[in-house]
Amino acid sequence: MFSEHYTGKEEIIFSPNEHFLNQQDGKEDERITDTCFKIQGKEIKKYHLECQSSADSSMLVRFFEYDTQIALDEGEIQGNVLTVTFPHSAVLFLRCSESTPDRLKTRVITPAGKIEYEIQVMKSQEYTLKEIFEKNLLFLIPFYIFTHEKQFENYEKDDIKLKALLEEYEQILYIPISSGLSGSWATAMAMAQDEPYEGRVFVVDHGRVSTPLHRLILDAAELIGEGYSGKDIRDILEASREDMEIYIGVDTLEHLKKGGRITPAAALLGTVLNIKPVLKLDVGMLDSYKKCRGFGKAKKAMIEAMEHDINTRFKEYKDRGELYLLAASSASGQETEQWVKEIEEAFPGMEVMCDNLSLGVSCHTGQGALGIGCCVKPGRRL
Image (cartoon, rainbow, N blue to C red; front, side):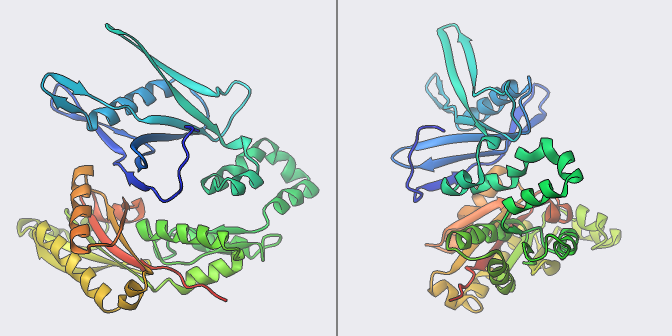
């Protein structure tokens, strides 16, 4: 897309997706991008990607707003000169037609002259399943069904056509949010037991959410690449469901009160005493672990708990290089970056994967929550 060639060993540095525009009245206007990251190759290059259902007239304006804010976030002022670097941008269209453009262009007229740059376009409907796997574009798999969207009514009326569609999907591996936090698993499991899905749709009950779930999906992709069947992958992932731990420090008691986890009186007293709870997420269940006076002590308690777990329960996996160190956050980009640095300092030599705390958890914790955790690389079967 960008005429770049990477080995796959380059470091990928994800940037915050939340960007804030300072208004004249002192308020901040938030902009949320789909994803923004840098790749450390021979040189560092910044990328900004958006996923769009279909083209619309406002998209170019939004791209310019996003790209400008991304550039300003890392702008440098030296003397009387402001230097900003715009990202390489692209959009993924889930639906396309003859009028869907192959490229988008932004033109900026400045007093010093005209500047133009292109926004690359990727159309998911142009890729066959074979091409998706050959080019390792696995992130397109969930969107492949859009290629059949216009035929859904015909499939419902014609069993032969429906059967042909189902045969296109040899096996489906579904990895929803933890069954302990959502009913998605139970619903999918009930459907997977019906004909003609039985033996072809495999639903994983993994007990994970947020960054551990992200890591599990990457593990599943590796297992697919190694040739395991859908059933084998489900069994392998479910066998590792206990090999995970995550701690989450909560900065506000408001959402715990609204969710009924603590009483209004306890929330009021805790706020007055500056109590910051540390929650423990273990196999899909969110429970209380420790109460600390101040968020700094909560962060210290989480790191100490993680150190203990890694040096005891997970020691053999760490020694074999089979342990992943994880982080999660519903705090600001700056606070998240500082949290990751603290984790890296506490666990030198271990790479940290950090994601935004998923909505299934942050609805309980509120904004400002930080998490640390670990999980084990799933064992293979001979």
